[in-house]
Length: 258
Image 1 (tube, one colour):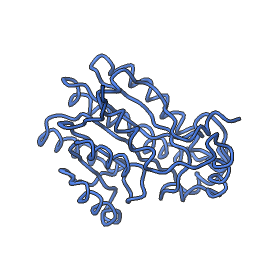
Image 2 (tube, helix red, strand yellow):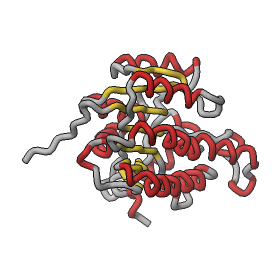
Image 3 (cartoon, one colour):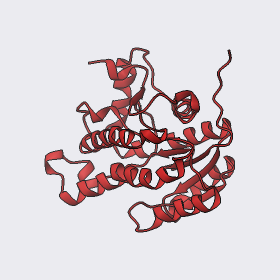
């Protein structure tokens, strides 16, 4: 028997593409190659010029701004999806942010305001999206995904406050999975190893982190964004109907090494 990932007839919302080097782009591309129709968002006017070519390449049916810190923008995106599609089968959340002064300092020195912003954008926004996606997935079931990192469970030099924030995101993934599972909705977190993206450029000494991962990983290599896309497509498909509440690593085994 031949098993293939088939997403024909499925509608997917992808949040977090910055450019063609983004993990979210690789996931969106895999969704599209498997037959899904896409809705893609961009952060603001400045980022639009980088994301629009990607949306055009992937023939996105919906292309809209979404800044989760701007009141109403998230809701407008879901209103359009409801009006044009009346359903949503796949949600990919791939956004994270922390104020620079908090991200590059010690966790113990983190400001309350900085921590609130980091949690809001990087974790609670996933809950907000899940709340709006649930009614669109209830009849058919669906798959919600977010992106996390190994620093959620281990202290990684220079990852700083994003470690606790990602730990919160993973805990939310489990809780949401428990709450929506009765509707056939699956919720999982994907945890890629370090990979060069625009978002990663904000982390101090990131090249050092890359070198360490390549040396320690059992397969002695770094992942690429193309390693993540197929996993996301699998989780979006009916083949993954029994997988939920998980944090799934794509890192050449780096997470198993002490």
